[in-house]
Each structure stands twice: as C-alpha cells, then as structure tokens.
Image (cartoon, rainbow, N blue to C red; front, side, top):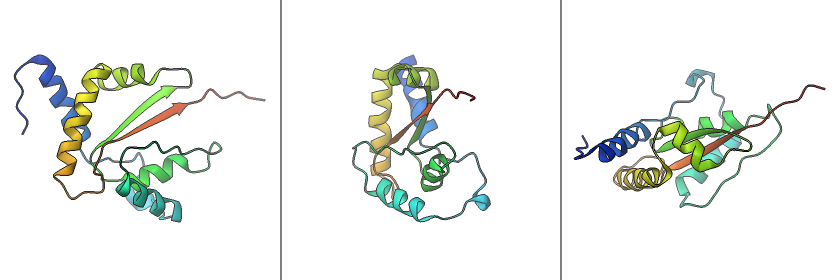
Length: 137
C-alpha cells in the first residue's frame, strides 16, 4: 500500500493505484476471438520501450477490439478519450483529475512498479482514443 504525506501526493497515489489495476476491456473475455493482429500487438506491447504506436483504420475495422484484447489484464494502461480537436494534456486532466505535470509523476511511479513485476508491460501505455464526429450522408 502506498503512503502519501500531502494532498498532491494523495492524488498521485490515487491515480497510480487506478493505473495499476488490471485493464479490463468493455467486452467479456469469452467474446474475444484471438486474431493474429492481437498476438502481434501483445508482443509489441511487451517489447515496447516508449515510442508511439498508432493504430488506424476504418470505422468498425476492429481497432479497439484488437488493442483492448492485447492489453487485457495488463496493469499500467491509461485510456484517455478525447475529441478530434482536443489537446491531449487537457484530455488527460479531464480523465484523471490531475494536471499533466502531476500525471508525468504518476507515469514515473507506475513505470517503477511495472519494472518490479513480471507482467506484460515494462512501461505504462497511454491510449488516446480520438472520437471523430460522424456525418450522415
């Protein structure tokens, strides 16, 4: 259990504990179908050291399903939903209730905890889910 001395440390601890919870996708595990892309993503996340990975494709092509399946039960996953024009720092603040500089400290602490475990991830993963506006034709 983490101990903190002041309010900001308590906020850091709250978010660290949240991010260290095993990631659970929105769909049940028994609904998951193992696909080659899921295996490739899981291997990529396991070897990931800090570079950006962009998953793109048409709406309904399985992007969300693939990354969520690959990260199922992995601690250290931060999911941030944001609109297409939103600044990521603002989205992180809205999602976790801490400013970006505090969130950087959270990531440092999560990285230290992950390094002490034998789980899938060695570093935290931040997923920016960009919600695009849709137009009807």
